[in-house]
Image (cartoon, rainbow, N blue to C red; front, side, top):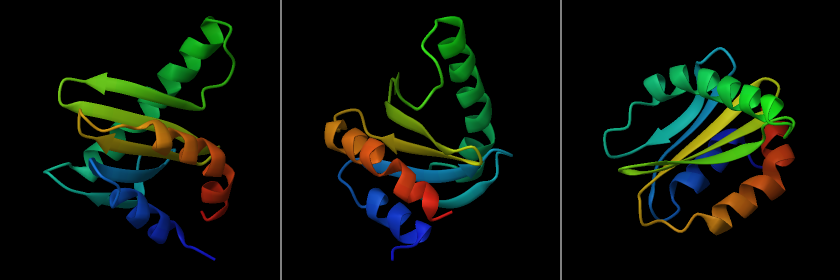
Length: 117
């Protein structure tokens, strides 16, 4: 069976990926692989508040619990996902990266990834 480290490594090898960070709800990185100057600890520290805000948005808009989102920035995308009640995931990708297959894989394998924690 794969480990969380192997999953993070596999995701980080995908074309256009600058960072993969698995984060505890406390904002501490559980595992990460980064490139191009991404600071995994700062990303991890900020992610829980982003997810909490997305959850509030979903509740206020009658959309229910937050699962996965794509955030667009000037220098790329952030795929953010709730793995389980204790862990979150963020994948930072370059602007021209096609994230369709990655989103599908994350959604399809979310519970299996969470089970590795």
